[in-house]
Structures are given as structure tokens and as C-alpha cells.
Image (cartoon, rainbow, N blue to C red; front, side, top):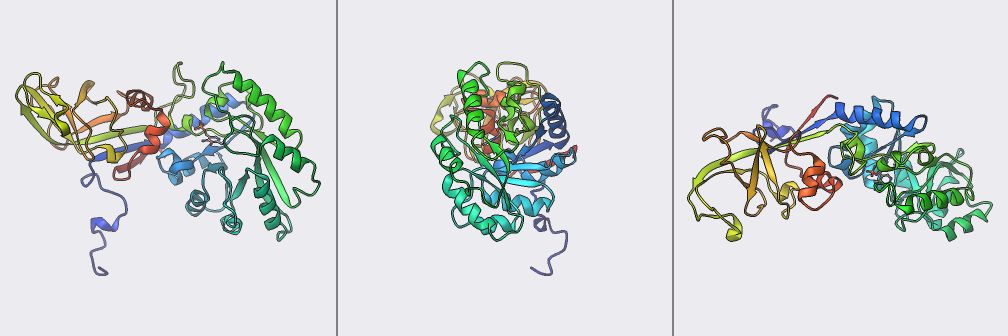
Length: 378
Ligand SMILES: *Cc1c(COP(=O)(O)O)cnc(C)c1O
């Protein structure tokens, strides 16, 4: 293999357009514009970027570099492994916080990658404090409190316990006290105000530090929710942070699948696995090289689009293919190799999520790994 030609296609880790069944275009310029819009909404508060699950499926490293050009220097990932990979990709500058906390015994790995844990329990605080004893200037961390979501963070009783222990934070440089909102996408939900009050009460017991509460939707709950640092993810990626109202964000993803074959069938033809659909009359069909292995949920009742024409899915979604009804197009208009749209101007991420009974977050996080990926606007 050593003397293979240097430009042999497989030398490139990326999948070429010719080799892929679908093309995923990610508009880094739109992500940057969305970041600027969120900053504007925030007024004076700082704005981090949440890059968990590989930047909601869009590429944490690429998204991070785009955000860094906007001056963003604080990132959040969910897992230690994600933090280590992101640190390798973006270098030493920005702070990277690990939302789910550090598994016991992994503190040294986190230090080696210059990651900051989000400390979610008294035990995690103890472990980080112990690690910090070896460092003259201590070690940075964010402390998360559970203000009412019951998911991650120190419970009120734990906060009270560490508040009564004068040495609990020895060597721990508390950069932020944070919490997470359960119902921020429902502005009238009473839990929002209750969580904000609980957050106030809990953070008053902890070492004085900047505060962080709002995710994307939280930013749109207004300035009482902004504090010192916001942590948007979804809105950066074009998901509507204000469901039920016009999307204040720009769309970011364009997903197109390639036609593998077209055919005509007669009335009565069984279509796809299980013959769950039979042609009601003669039909023109196109099969695209795209299926549930690419993250499109099998249960979705959906359509692709071509030149503003809706092309409904017929029959079941297969692993690597979907059959479209293209009878609405002039004969021969769509041919093998042409691209149809699954996400983009005709069908937003939120629309697609609606057709699948899920949320935009899941649509993005499910996106597969065998697309030809194209980054534009960086
Ligand atoms: C995922 C997450 C965010 C970002 O939420 P979005 O709704 O995507 O903006 C912020 N904070 C925490 C703790 C999270 O888990």
C-alpha cells in the first residue's frame, strides 16, 4: 500500500461526491450569523457554543473554528472523549467544558487535555479538589446545580453540604455556577420562573462566580435568564428556538440524496418491503441512495423535493434506499445521479422533525456518517 499513488481516492478520509449516496452541505457562514444574532439578543452577556454530539452532527471541529472567528472562546461538550477530540482539533486557546462531568479516575486525562469539568456532584467536587492540590494555581471548573430538571447537577442538599464546608473548594477555580432549564421552549411554562428562583437561591450558597442558565430557547426568555454566559446549541444550527413563532435563525444544513434509479410501474404494483403500498394507478418512481442508515427515521411520513415539487415517499424507508413518487414531474425530468432535497429551502430541519414525530435536535444528531460533506461560508 505504501507505493499507492498519492492521489488515490481512498487516501482522503472524506467521501467524494461521486462515491456518496447523499451530499450534506453545512453553511458555516449561517452558523456565524446565528451566533451574531444570539449575541445581539443577549446584549452584554457572553455566548458560548455547545458542540456535543459532534456539533449536533455537523462537525464539532469545523463549527468551533467558525465560531472562533466570531470571537467565541468557550465551548461545551457532553463527554470527556468529545472534549479530548475537540482539544486536539482546535488547539490550546478556547475553554472546553465537559457537561456530563468526569468519570471517577479520569481527572488526569481531563487535565492533560486542558478541559474544565462541569462538576455535578459532591463526589466529583472532591475528586477535582484532590487533583487541584498538585497545581499551584488550582484547576478551573464549572459547578452545576439542579434547579429543577432532575437530570444533572448537585441537588439542593448537596449544595447545602458543600456550602457548610469551608475547604470544599480548595484549589478549585470556580469559573461558573450553572444550571439547565427543562422547559425553556415553552415561555409560559411556570417551571422557568421556578427554576430561575431555585438557581438564585442555590448559587447564593456557592463561591461567588459568574452564572450561566440559558440554552438557545432560554436566551429568548429575556434578560433575567441571560446572566453572564449563555450556552446555545440548537439555535446555532438553525433549529427554531422559539417553537410556534417564526424562526429567528438562518438555516444551516442542506441535505440532498442521489437518484440511484428511476422506473415506471403499473397500477397494482407492490412498492417496497412488505408491499405496504400498492400503486393506485401507473406511477413514475425514483429510488434514492438514502435510508434509515443515514439517520432518516424509518417511521417518518415524509417527502423529498425537486425544483419546488414535492416527491412523497412511497412504501417503507429501507436501510439504504427510499422510493419516491415522481409522477408530478415531467417524464425524464429526474434521472439517475440527480440530487433531490431532503433538508433545505423546501423542508427545514424542524419540518422534517414534525413529519417524523420528533424534534430538530434528533434529526441533526441522527445524521449519518457516509455523506459527502461540504462546508461552505467558513
Ligand atoms: C444541550 C445543552 C445545552 C444547549 O441546548 P440547546 O437547547 O441546544 O441550545 C445547554 N446546556 C446544557 C447543560 C445542555 O445539556
